[in-house]
Image (spheres, rainbow, N blue to C red):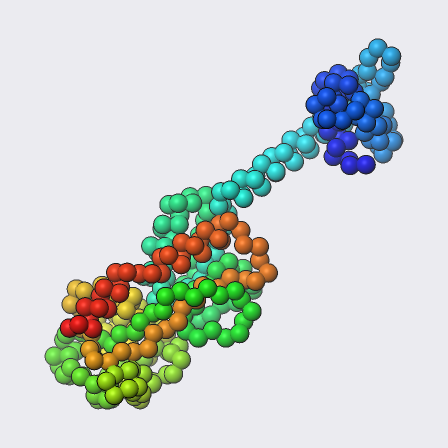
Length: 307
């Protein structure tokens, strides 16, 4: 017999005064309610109700047991209410990891929009260019840039990141402005440590694909730090437009090689395959996919191409 149903029958019997009254509220017969109470008494080895032909009253043991049953049933009801709320209102902790370049540019705007819409969620944004293990680190979402190894994670393709070669006006004034990729070999090119092909930059131009071997006196494992180095007039960088868009628009950095296009970097949003996709996760994924469309960056890129 269902113990929780029997406990509910017992509590209703006490509160309504009889098996018949308790049965009316549960959709059961009076005899079934009586069976529920007798089942509890047999299981507990003690009488819960003193019964006579005219009335029934709680035993001392039954009074204490009734209070415990009421408490348990109320807690169950509250737990079910919380579960219902969780299914309809995103809440809880959401842990997201993303590369530094995205975590300091696109992601704050996406997270802010998400938190404004779902204030009961707490987001922890983990900025890390090295790829973290979602399961081992307790992460819900990862944004990954570059080719994906076969990891078994569920991936959703996001708009790719276009790369742009640029340098500061002061650097170009001192060292000249390269017009073709081959001319970069005489410049101080600042490289990204985690690039797929270290010290090799690729472009596509009027004559097809071009691959050059670069050299420079500085390598950094962070896109924002490379941007800062370029702003300090140290050399040429090849970074996603999202990292340098504001500097290009303000004239602090100058786009180079207008007749050539650097390859775009694929971007994916990853989640664990064996994790139930909660409402908070589902809503974040939807918002992130929309947020990565980045129309403003495309406009900056179009201005560069046409200059």
